[in-house]
Image 1 (cartoon, one colour):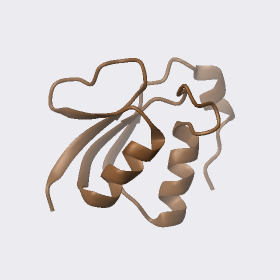
Image 2 (cartoon, one colour):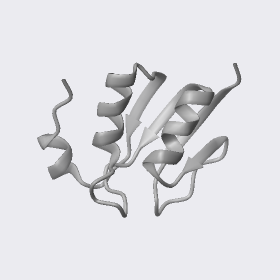
Image 3 (cartoon, one colour):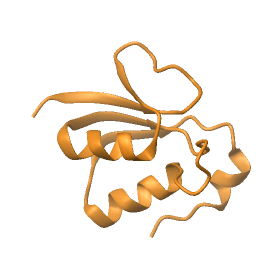
Image 4 (cartoon, rainbow, N blue to C red):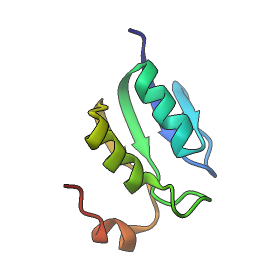
Length: 85
């Protein structure tokens, strides 16, 4: 399976070498169809009910994995409130 790195963000451009996913659904599609070397997540997306935290919750429930995950969100307050089971 092809390895890719994914950058989930609806405002910023993806760094060189990354595939940009602007929505949670685009990101889920990539997770299901590629081996993800690095997943860089933004928490806040334009759709407030489908955000980076919800993506991680779905990843856990559907057993979707990335070799490495980082968060690049500017919303540090919301990130401190997040808990993943």
